[in-house]
Length: 477
Image (cartoon, rainbow, N blue to C red; front, side, top):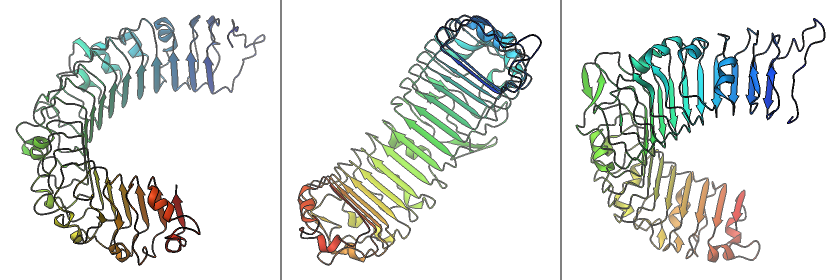
């Protein structure tokens, strides 16, 4: 409605739209003046690109959600006034340098705050006192604010610790963002995510002895190349998920000791650990041992990882292990793999030459899925599985991809009576299926980019058609 100039909603004393619950105003560049005073049932208001709209003296006591986008700071201040808003999203607000104390006082019931694309924003709050007006805030997201340096200005006070309900904090693509407040994180915080913050140098102590222990459960750090360390070599024992990607200069847990509670040092009880594009991955793994509760371990592009931890066979809780582009990895631990693994993946581990017969796969009585992709000398032989390799009978899914030397699927596959899915992709030399056929349990066979085998599996005409025709789901290109 690019030509709309004025809102006229009432005739005489009659209230206009008394039942209106949601109002969306997008791209009304000529709409001027004010919105109606009497939208008494309004719950959600979304205003985008209405630069001439100068006031919004709403009387609704029901308003819960407010979105203001591509507007001015003046409009934002006038929109916020009812202490009923629980979710506020602001995007592209010109002139907004911080959230003032006056603005905060109109957000006493705010639970969710999302700020995006505010080019003048240098900090969220000038000092810690404004945070006292946000006792219910549980989710804070800041994205694409190029001038943002910190969340709290020079007069930090107690910093974020005043946000006594905050559970989720996410900061993304703020290129000048240097650090979180030195005063630490709220003890209520469950999830901390920092993505693409090039200037971030450190994280605060998450176990400040002068405050309650942090209850953080999930920490995700991606593309923070200036990050070198945590302020203290400690992580909260409550941490369940740790993801670090493309933080190449991070020196993690240099002392190898972390805090279990306020009085004891020990290893964290992680359940999920993902490291990607990481130069110091070998020392990192050693520093967080033991990982007794770890269920998922994913390592990707860890250039200096030469070996998995010697204690890894004792990771009795580990269920999923994925190794991708770990080009220096040469061997599996001498004691084999953890006994309760259900999923095993190897992608482009080009120096892993230790024969699969020494991996101890036959002992993995819970293994249901194995995936091998690309350069992996241990598995890229002319036959899979190799004659000396015993696969566990529990396997339900096998995926083989881009194995340059693979020519034959051996007869041992027929003994995998639980096998339901077999995927073969990009194995250009593969030409032989087991003479005795595939397991009768097989429900899906996928053959892709295997030109020789594809021709031999052609419907009615191919050599192996009689072997595969009764498989319920056939995908052959």
